[in-house]
Each structure stands twice: as structure tokens, then as C-alpha cells.
Length: 96
Image (cartoon, rainbow, N blue to C red; front, side):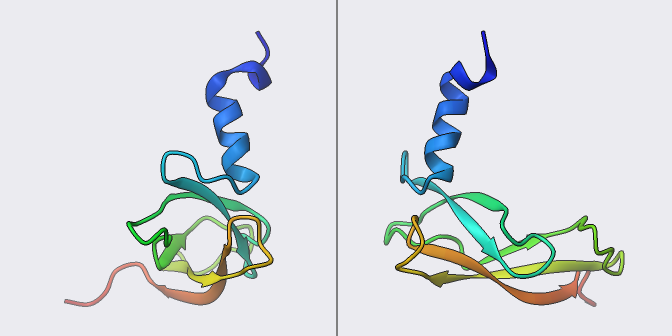
């Protein structure tokens, strides 16, 4: 059986096309080292995605102690209605 025929892969494909299924959708990341990739996120009761997403391990090799930060932005021209816009880096460990 091919991977494309698996029900789970079909579900992921629908999320990446912007369909909201089971209150979950794929949202494109814009800018930064993860530009063009998607995050599959669960929406809240108002159908908004989590306000912030953090990512590490980019090819641009940020400092080892930094996260890349993306902020949710309404985008009516995007399939899911949202994008994650790059906001820069922040430290992984905040001083206590």
C-alpha cells in the first residue's frame, strides 16, 4: 500500500491545503529560516491558532541557545485564513 493511500496521510494533505478538520489546520510560516513550511496546529474556541510558534534547528544556524519565533497573523488571502509571520529569535532559556 502506498503512503499516499493511507488515511492518516490523506488527513495531513487536507490540513496542508487549508481545510479545518477536527479543529486542526496547517498554517504556512512566512519569513525566516522556515519560510514556506507548514505548522499543523489546533485552533481555539474562536478558531484562532496559537499566537506564537517557536522552531529550532534551521539551516541558517542561529545561536544554539535561541528559538526562531513566529506570530499568528490573520491572512484572508491564505487558504487557512492565517499565516505565521517571522518575528526573530528569542533565548531558549530565560534567566530566572
